[in-house]
Length: 497
Image (cartoon, rainbow, N blue to C red; front, side):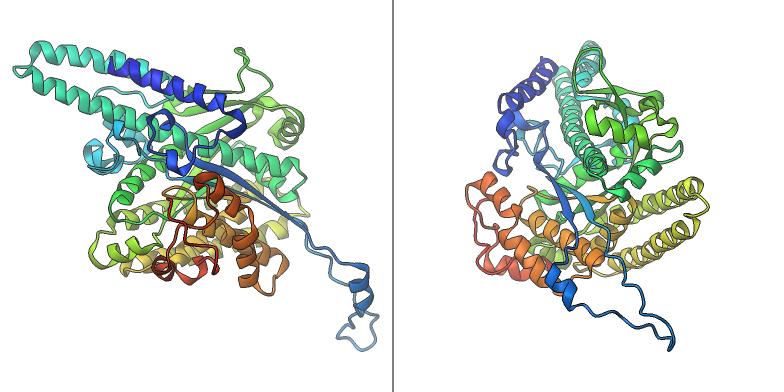
């Protein structure tokens, strides 16, 4: 009965979202609702497009530059920077917020799983050992739990000398199974949004994203999904982080296969692939289909498959992280960053080989320089992770350096906090400012960032979530944020989280 209700809950959530197709945003205030538990909180896609425009009056003021050689003609002006395209997905942490799956009273999945295993293979092994649960997809999970756990429950009831204990154990396993289902369903939506964002940037004409796609679609290629997590390691947010690290580990290796149509007429289909991997079939048409065909090996949609390499880096920035740094436990945050640094280093090695193999003789020098830039950033990240491991503090350079590398490797990034609203809002505006500065050498980065935070789309996101357009920080909370994350005066004070 419990598992039948689980499936009905998922089906009801999908029907509810479809009924609100024009406004299907799961608001931050809805994250605890059972009806929404399978859907990601406050999922948004930011597409930044920018190019340098020089007016006629500015051109007239420009003077031709003289070369340093005495007898040479005036040097040619430098070509303007190419247009900037950047994709960022923001969301509230993939976690079991609803009371139905236990919320965070006893921590998250990293704590609840037998043996504390949080890698993808360990997750499957742990769940199989604890009841044979299949984590493949949300729509298949109820049957798997019903068949496997149901048979186990009947057997325990027949053989146990304490039927009441058997019932409690079964309920505990069933709730764990449902929590996994909820968390991974949310996480899969994030990965789909990230992949689609990269493809749409390429379809818009971004040469850099087209290159990213060609490398990701190569036989040995993968697409990096970098996750910037702003959760603290205190209280309920520790439990959210425990759920999210499991979700990020599970996403590592998920594949997206692009097709022209599906037999059932749907746009998406999730299924179990070879060796227990997760495959997502996505119907594409029009410009998206064209760009994938052009980028795929052999120019065929049949070969258009993108596999995710996921690397998540965590650093709390709010007042609760200050408390955790003084008296709490940072072990999970430190372990997460160390483990994901290894994932990131493996991805850089893999992508370096793919980039060299795809480069023509004319592109070899530029590709070598590009790879050298990646490895320089990787060394800086290694130093930042090491420093953050050895000393408590808000080591935001871990987040900034990893976002730089994610931008260089995939042309996109993902950012989250508890609700994907306040901390995420100031973080995504910082990310976009830094992307603009890197491409166009913006003079006053602080001013640009303040403008985005004061007048940009994140104020509208606040309004949609809470019916007020101010960041939910008070004056004391703002002072606890690292300086680069502080919203400008007059934009904070909202009390709804």
